[in-house]
Image (cartoon, rainbow, N blue to C red; front, side):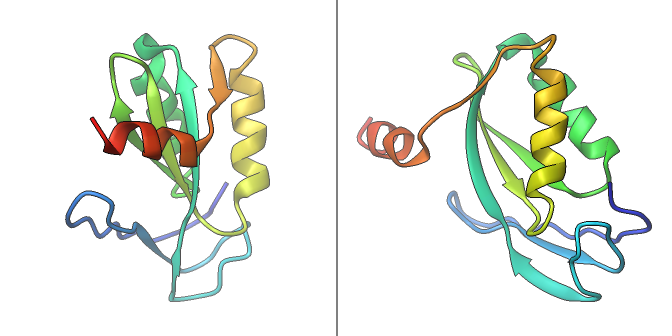
Length: 115
């Protein structure tokens, strides 16, 4: 969990990069550093996408959830560098009650870019 952080998400055209500006963090992100996020693809129970999003938002900027396909439950997590273990722990805990499975991002992109 990140304490007292300021988050800024820049979003442009599809495929654009999310950035975070953080002042202090338990995830070891330096002050006023703008960094590219780590992308991880998952499939979740489509009825629980909003719940997962709110859980991640409650942890002050460790990740931003982007819904790729709401019908299939495919999501993309933009994870702040250094917060991968925190996000993994949150997802592991949520897996006790919610279907969450990692999917291959390269395969997902290759399949869905041609549609």
